[in-house]
Amino acid sequence: MMPRALRRLVHLVLFCPLSKGLQSRLPAIKVKYLLLAWLGILIASWVIYMQYASYSELCRGHVCHMVICDHYRRGIISGSSCKALCDQRTLTLQHCMSTSSTHQVYSGLWKERPVVIKCGIEDPVKTDGAPDSVLRQEMSLFDKPTRGTSMDEFKEMLHNFLKAKLGEQPSLSTLVDRVITLADVNKDGKVSLAEAKSIWALLQINEFLLMVALQEKEHTPKLLGFCGDLYVTERVGHSSLYRLEVPHYLQALIPEALSSSLNHWLAPAWPRRARITIGLLEFVEEVFHGSYGSFLICDASPHHVGYNSKYDCKMANLRNVASEAVVRGFLRGRRCETNADCTYGRDCTATCDRLVKQCNTEVVQPNLAKVCVLLQDFLLFGAPSDLRGDLEKQLRTCVTLSGLASQMEVHHSLVLNNLKTLLWKKISNTQYS
Image (tube, rainbow, N blue to C red; front, side, top):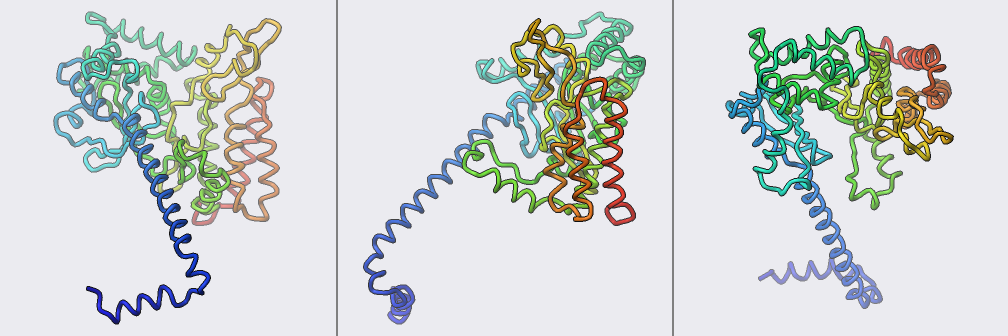
């Protein structure tokens, strides 16, 4: 039982400060707060349910692990990460970061080193859900090359494939040699059938192909290993320009202005954002007329651009970067009614020739203009007052750039270099440079 003196104290604290009128309304107030509490519980329960449903639909790393290790133990596939994943268990999947059920992304550890593990699996809607049906679907990934294919024939396969993906480039033979070296896991100077099947399956993944082609570039995550069509990359400390990402099922409830304000508040200091921006502009340079042709950013989202602990830009997701040859091939001869019918990915859009009802092959908005749209939000808030006017002017010029061939060379280079110079002058000779 509560001591009498304590009961009196509680009564005094709870009721004495209240007026008689308020005390008479107390039951109604209690009901109001009870309803609010129940509403809070319902909303919290709905959020938890949606989070669980989203996780169970998107996160299927256990299926990836089962399929890859089954193929490895049967000798169908090979790779530099297979033993660590399937035998030694020193490569482990930890936190799910997937945004698609068919493209699994996990943070993990490989011998205590933080890594990102990526793996493609068949859409569960297209299978009957049983593990053996997933295995059957995955088998078709590793059907090439067939037994009896010679090394010369395999090299020719690779050359033709890369030519189709990247266009006719003078350095394609160098890239073929790089792929062969990567496939030769045991470094015996030969490529086994399992090694060939694995590298061929991996090359069908756009992001993997780009990582191999751009592996010497500073702003591309390093490829650390693979097993079958599972591959391991270095972990980017911050996998998005912004720290707060509102789940899709909450976007209708949370105002965009609120999430934007929170992201501005959580963002790094302006000089660090300037350093990240310089790296992003350097990436745009790297993919424009590189050794293996030009590449187009077909989804310029802040969620695909990351940075490390030193605030160096690293592209966290290359799945939406496509070679110009692939985009042109997609658009060439495509029937259309409006410009929207001439879109590759999310925003690589060309114009529709309405007279012949066919798409033109030149993308209207170039990489630099798309990146500058991102930078208008990321870079302008908190900018130094003596720089803000010039920065706004440069970004306005940048976002209006056209992707037409007549503008692509000198004009783009001039705008990009002006932006970099403006930012670099402000942060050079400081702790942020």
